[in-house]
Image 1 (cartoon, rainbow, N blue to C red):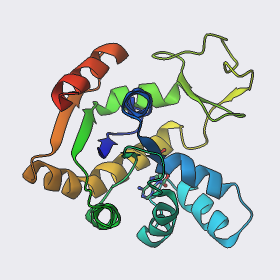
Image 2: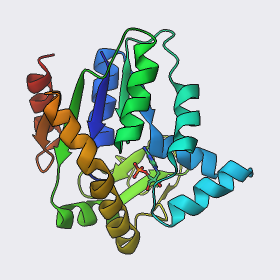
Image 3: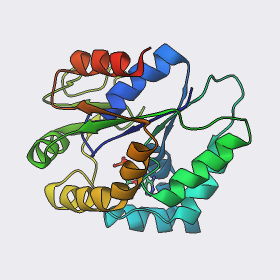
Image 4: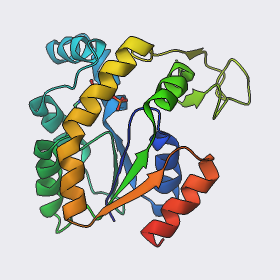
Length: 212
Ligand code: AMP
């Protein structure tokens, strides 16, 4: 089974993705996280990705294509959970083309809806572990260790989690995903879930709507 989880930044898609990956044996393909790692490398692509992300814009489809080709290894997995992609029709086609080589396709898309004020509130409270990359939220999902991660690492605020950059990312997100969400609707694979509910309620609603 191949799933996509899509939603504005801060909608809790990372948390829900983790549940689904563990329960269904899927490989988690989180493009934001993969790109952040690439942005740290001192290469031409690394610098290009870093500059694009710092501006709050989307990286080019060409760069994303190279990354996805590397990541979509079917060995030992029951499918993929795409998180952060596809954000446009080009990316959607690309993913389905790669999956089609294995006789597969994207089966369902979970869309987590969230109002803009709530997104800004949540993202400004987001903290990421410097060591293991785990993501917490001071309000909705705090670390049991207070100001440090469960692994002991220090929790930091991402540079693109400040209000101005958040607004730019949201705009880019809706502008570019509008068309792809419409395509999912037309293909009848879109499952919409209210992201403004407790984590466990959202999880149960997703399971129920996916019939898993
Ligand atoms: P996210 O963690 O999903 O908010 O992504 C952080 C940043 O990574 C975005 O603002 C983009 O610059 C980049 N990014 C993540 N996923 C994609 C994608 N599918 N296509 C293009 N850029 C992406």
